[in-house]
Length: 155
Length: 155
Length: 155
Image (cartoon, rainbow over all chains, first blue to last red; front, side, top):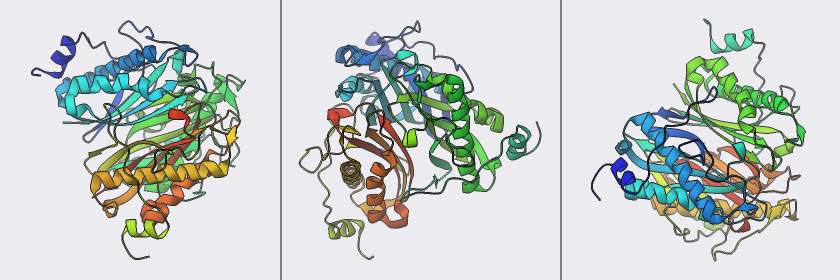
């Protein structure tokens, strides 16, 4: 598939939102050498509304969680664009850390996180394949259903 | 503000404790290249007593959590000093990972973690601004209210 | 102790399993520069059966958790071998991230994670000593008792 990463995303109907501004003494990303560390992104859409709110296994379905994780990934891309100006400067998606707001008996976090992983591969192809850690957590900021952070090798 | 990082901290009444000794086959920090990875620090004070114990949203207030996160950050600085001998060798605070011992309905983890973020900026100024991930967890070692780890670019 | 890392492991009765295949658009490891990021490994044995299932503090004992964390570490080594072909290319175990499937009142996560830390030192000696973060989480994939990920400096 030809075209820039952003063109690929646009062709799939994905528009990057403005990256969420820093709310405090932290920032959306820090670059050190060729690594870009991006802050945890909750599943907010371009209007800042949560795509899914509450716990997987207690009101939020795996399908809703998948869409939420995809939204987190879109927000990661928005931060990368703010950092680099151009998503095509991503050399490799190195690692995603996935945190699923989970009831104690919800065990399908990996199916939820696939929403983020699939988007990375849709955007970057094989360079989008990454190491990943998925865990279920007792709560997330603003009761978001999913939060994902990332480490990226960039040029 | 002139002076070393430690002088700035002292002027704010913050004294670095002895870094907590390794309790097992892990250590407080590992340097690889220009990156320093520091182990998760719980909110213990210089005497080793927890600044806040228990769960946010179930006995521990957000204000107490803020103070606890600040304590975690002080412990991170103590590890950095042990690693480098001098806090002024920190080039950038790259990333903080914040884990808040949370009741399932506590959603203000970011306000808690600001205690750590604010201390980093108090110590390092703009170099203290960092990427950050905050999540609520079901339990922490010794029932500490907060645990924070970090990645630092160092010279 | 002479011999390769794998010989040391074999002498201790530890045989590396086949690394678990990627189940989706993520992979077991990504190398960037001299750093190897390995995906979170649950406590499955060589047959893919969980060594311990369920929550620490609610059915799973600390001793069972220790064995589970050791199993996670064995799976990390299997991924490293797949990445590098030879465990002796590990320069340093930089960081382990330990996630313990925990009841809200279980506070001994560090004792569980020692199972992973001890194995790293058994394999690599002093190069196996690492930074570590241990937290208790509300659930893990497949109800695994423990999940561990890692960052390694490699040659």
